[in-house]
Amino acid sequence: MEFKINRNDKRPLYIQIRDHLYDLIKTEKLKEGDRLPSVVGFAKEFGVTQATINKALEELSEQGWITSHVGRGTFVSKPKASKANKSITTSNNSTFESGNKSFVSAARKLRMGIAQSLESLDTLLRTPDLIKLFSGVPDPSIATPGILEKMTSDAFQNYGQDIYQGYAPPTGLPELRNVIAQRYQKQGIKVSPDQIIITSGSQQAVSIISQEALDNKRRIICETPSYRGIFNAFGAVGHWVETLPRDTDGPIISNLERFNDKKSSVMYLVPELHNPMGTDITEDKTLKIADWAQNNNSYLLVDEIFRDLRFEGSTPKSLLSVAGAENSVVISSLSKSFMCGLRVGWMISSKDRIQSIISLKKAIDISCPPLMQGIALSLLKTGEYDKHLNKAKEHYKIRRDATLEALERFMPDGVKWTIPPGGFHMWCELPKGYSSIALFLMAVNRGVAIIPGPKFDLDHRFINAFNIGYGSLNPEQIYEGIELLADAIKDLLRVPPADTGLSGLGGII
Image 1 (cartoon, rainbow, N blue to C red):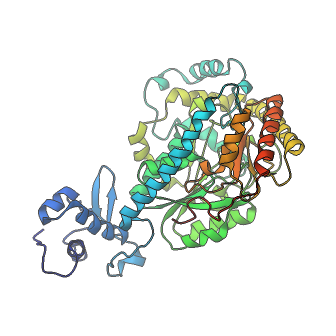
Image 2: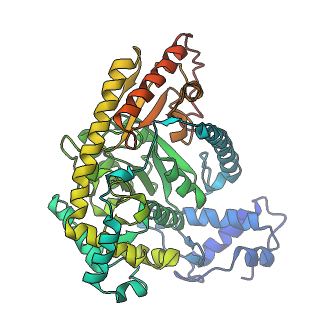
Image 3: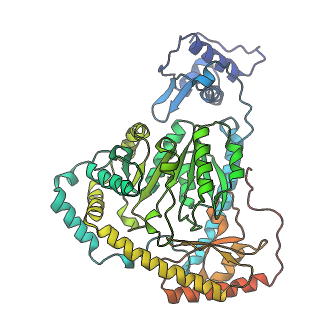
């Protein structure tokens, strides 16, 4: 590129390189769509380290002048109008983003170290005859005997063997997408089949969005507490995950203000029958979160995996309708409502967004296994899925009620809990200053186990809270388990609280 580093220039090396590339782009010697050399190639050509090249490219990328795609390379791009007339400026970002990788790395290691310490508690779960008040999977006893064999046979008879011998389209079997769209339409939600991609469970949907966000340099925000697998999916590709604490009514809106910076973001949240709290977001918070997404060049990753398991109360409006398809991606699956082994889920968004991620989905697995899709299609079309839902709702309601009755009967004053209107998760809180990790250890010693609150949070807060999952236990086991747990709590509360004023790693480390 006919450029030499000036070692006498007072400007840092990366700024010299950045400004040179910027001039080439502005004078159209490098045009939109042109592919840049690799970082290794740049480093050799300019006689600098790869770290220096990375820093220069990061600042150009932040201003929108180049775009990187994993596995494809870095290309010249055209920034949005709001940035096009601005001179490029040096990043002085003080948060954990691209310009501060050493801080990101240190903080990530701290998070991981504490998480690994908490995971070591799981070795205690191998204690014989332990009552496990934490199941996060559907109870297999609900399924009608022989249902998989019946639905597999139906799939072969009605749809032919040929579609199972090859690959399905990356978006999924057209008829399955059509049936799913119809189910949403019956709920008053406008969805067409070409707004849907079939995935191998909702976890794969999160992984796809994680990669899409990385390619487009979107910030990741996750409500917390939340299912740990979501944090892992984002962290696996290198995201620093910002956390947005919630209470039983949904994300704390005042904490959302620090993200009012127009930076493109993806926010993960579970608006109804939340895991691990079991509660819904209020309508007021739903509207405010939708407004935030629409005003900040962002979209919501809305996990509706428990939506079909509501057994009382009205179903809240889907954020797909409130925020609009342009500002939301809804994910769901049959993993919680039917069985986790079927591994059929779906993702719904705008037609444009679905089209933009088809190639990414295809690169990951070509397509969700067509035989699994055929079984899911048979379940939905024959009505067997809805029959199963009716059984499941009654099953979980009986166990929810047994849990509430036992809590009322055995728990000491000061302990609080949610009343979930569906699903099989419940959130409990000890009085402030008491540790759910200490409770876990005391409870296991008595023959019962819960999941401590810090295990649901990247920054390991919610120290006085814990989750109960009651779905796979019978009422007798629930009564016995809650009584044992209450005895442990009574012992814990005999000692005055020892709150240090700290709560995990804090909101922003």
